[in-house]
Each structure stands twice: as structure tokens, then as C-alpha cells.
Image (cartoon, rainbow over all chains, first blue to last red; front, side, top):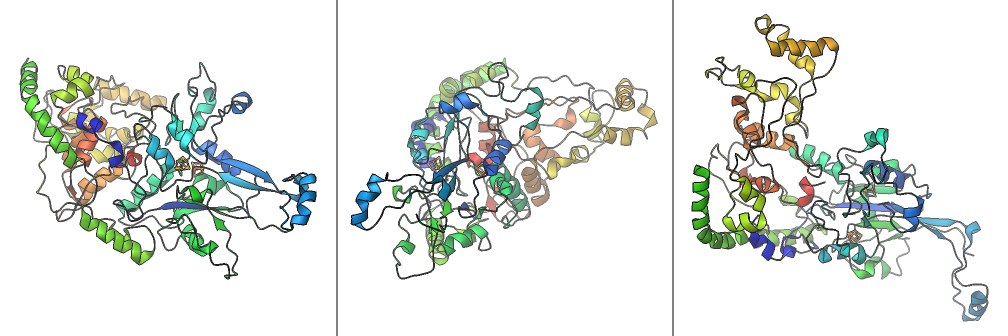
Length: 305
Length: 270
Ligand code: SF4
Ligand code: SF4
């Protein structure tokens, strides 16, 4: 650590998008797959994330002011009328209210957390290098480095970064964890203070715990050895998480099965029209090329209106 | 006094040292693997269709290192850094640079327990040469080294009648009879956002490299065996950690393969 560091370009020390780059993933690439066909939208994952990661419950008023702190949110989409392909029906369609919601037709739920992009837009804009791509393929957020410029929040296409507008651990101002409740805080996770950005970390405290054991035993983390809190809480098993480079991993198999390649922004499965095996895998906003590490599996719809 | 003298020398020499450190740090901090590694990585990509250097996980840059010396010096600041980057460090360099003196409920004599059996302590007694990890048992298998439970003290001391009436042991048994744990205070307290792992350090240096445990613990804790109540000896700042992490250390006692500690923020910060 010297002043020369300050004068040099921080981005030189970042792990960039590793495909073919100078810094390949060293044995690990943590990734996730979420099956929206199984997801019931019960919010258990969101609650689990609150409990695991010391998230502040901000209350209705702050929530409405956009100061929510949920690292994992469930977005709800009512099924709506598909746009008719026949142009003759289009007028009738527009007249009946295009994109009208039909709650009786059901909804689908999109659990959305930090996508741990391989080429994360949030990383390049951080003036102090507080958010980086790590060697094991997660997007880090270093709280003590963060100066709260909130550029990353602006640049994240998924809007999954949350800013600490208040000092939630100070009982004098914000009583988020009044006396007995402070006992519920997870000692492995920092309680963030005012002026710091935060977001899903892929439960890094759990990953590090198993990686240390694995390192001591001179092996890699095995499939099933670690679960994220949201995965653990999901009663339907919609979330799978693991080391994608491990040939045994469920998540790696799912990615291959669905023909989603992490290093591509246009998936070849979309081009094989003749291939009649249904592929449901997709990544959100892939065309922006952040190369996200979370794959979603589309809901299979029974009926169309 | 001699510190002030030393500092003025540092100030003079620093001008030259500063230039040197600029040239230095550009290579020393460079974490990028050499180009041969890139080629191997690219080959791995082609082979697996994935983005990993899956075959080279434990091979880290660097070759065999010389047998290490026992002394690892704390980070040296040059005067440019001291004035502009760490003015407090510069001011602190006029003091003794040790951590605060923590007052413990019982003045625990580390020297009496862990000291060298052949060496006479200031109180006229010799040490017992007990291994640090006899009491701090969790150091080799968890994040924290652990403070021994009261029953561990009692386990030995109920069989040592010769010191039973000394004031400290009397106090110890008062806690035991009252059924209360001793409220020891933390001496080496790291900030909440740091995850320091005792296990990896002990496993690597004591069990893999077979260095003496006193030396290994001493890298961060100083010579505890010569203290009574432990006092912080090192800064335990990030610079102190990184100073060691950027060095190559042998992976085992054969000293043929080397690697360094993680330099990834998210490994130690949480
Ligand atoms: S999803 Fe947003 S916060 Fe997460 S890595 Fe991508 S850009 Fe950054
Ligand atoms: S992986 Fe962990 S931090 Fe991320 S949304 Fe799930 S529970 Fe929250």
C-alpha cells in the first residue's frame, strides 16, 4: 500500500470478465438457476435473506419512498393477453385494452437479486473500486471501501442495489433491532452503517466457510456442501445454486441442459428453430451484455387467453 | 529519543526511497499471472467449454522459496506515505505503537503458562511451555482462536495445590464456585467487516510447513509467552495483512511449491 497505488488506475486490479481474459476463475464459478415454473411467489426466500444477511426492515413509509432494503425481491406479473398475430384482431385487441391484466389467469413471479454479472456495469463506475468481480465469479461489495457515491446503483440494469440512507444499527435514530432483537443478527455478516451500498452477496459468508474447509482438506467444495439462504428456504426447490465448474453440480447441468452459455450474449438455442426440445432457460437483459450468473427458467403456461 | 532520530533519517532517506517505491510497487502489486498462465487458461477454456483454469487451481505463481526467517517485519512506511496517506501512522511512530493495555478480570500470566521452561520470568518462576493451542483449542479448526472455558482452568488447577492460595487462583475459584464465566476482554479485536481465519493460517504454517507454533502465532500476536496479560503487538491493519499476503509462502514442508494468501477483497472482507 503506497501512494503510488492511489495514482494508478484502480481498474487494473479488477478481475474483469474472465472469458479468455487474464484472470480465469480459479476452480469456482458460483452460479444460480431459478425455476419460475416451480416458484409459488411465497416470499420465503426474501425473508430468509433478511434473516441471514442482517437486512434492515425499513417500514412502510420508507419503503414507499424507495428506501427499501430487500436484496431479494419477488416481482409479480399478472398474466396478460398475448398480442394477436392476426392483424385483423389487433383493433379489437387494442380496444379491449392492450396488455390488460387478468389476475384470474394467474401470475408469475420473478425472484430477482444481484445477478453477479461477469462484466458488471456497476463495477466500472465505482470511483473507489469498492465493487469488484472476484476470482470465484461473484460481484463483491466491500462496505468499508464504499464511499456512497451510488453510481453503481444508477448503472445496475437490474436495480438490485440498496443504499443505507440511515444508520439502522443506531437505536437512538432508527430502532430496527431494539434490545432483544439485536441477538438475531448474524455475526458473520457486517451490520452496514449509513452511507454504504449493499446488495446480494451470494451469501459469501457461507461460501467462505466451506471454501476454507475445502482448502484445508486440499479439495474443491463439493456439490451440495453449501446452500444460499434463499435456496435453503425455498420449499419448492426452485432455486439451485452451486459451483458451475463442478461437473456434478445441479446448476451447471441445468445451464448446459437449457443451452445457456454464460459467456455469450446471444444464445445458440434461440437460433436452432428446428430443435423441438423445449428450452426454457434465459437470462434477464442478456442483450445489454452484463453476462449475468443467474439463469431463469421460464414458466410453462397452460392456457393462453 | 532514538525513534525521533531514526525518523529524521527516514525523512532524509525517504526522498530516495520514494522514487524506488514507485518503481517497486508497480511490479510488487501486480496480481496478473504471467502470459504462459494465460495460454494455459485459454487451453482450459477450449477443453471444457467453460471459463475455468480448472487444472491449475493450486499452482500459484512463484517457485521454491528459501527457508523462511522467523522474523516477519511489520509494514514499513516511507515518509511520503506517512505524510499524505497515513499521517496518523507517522504521528504514532513517536509512541510505542502497541495496542491499548486491556485490563483483565484476572491478570493472566501467559509467561508462567506458555513461557520457556528454561527461562526465568520476572516473577522468579519459570514457564511451563504449554502449547498455545492447548487452551486456545479452536485456532486450528475455526475462524476464532477461542478463549478457554473456565472448566479448562479448573481442570488443571484443582490438581495443583501448591498455587491454590495465591490471589489470582483464589479469584479463579471464586468464579468457579459462583458458577460464572470469567468476563475476559478482547485484546485483538478486528473491525466487524473483517473476516480473519485462524484455521487457514495455523493449518498452513504449523501443520503443513511444520514451523514452530510459537513463531507462527507470533507473526500477529508477538511473543505472548513473555507477557503476562497479552497486549497487541502489531498494527493488524490491512497494510500489515497485505504485506504478508503478497509474499510467496511454501505450500508444505518440502518448500518446493509456493503460493500466496488471497489478495481478493471479498476473501477477508464481509
Ligand atoms: S446485477 Fe447489478 S449489482 Fe449485480 S453485478 Fe450486475 S450490475 Fe452489479
Ligand atoms: S444468495 Fe444469499 S444474499 Fe443473495 S438473495 Fe439469496 S439469500 Fe440473499
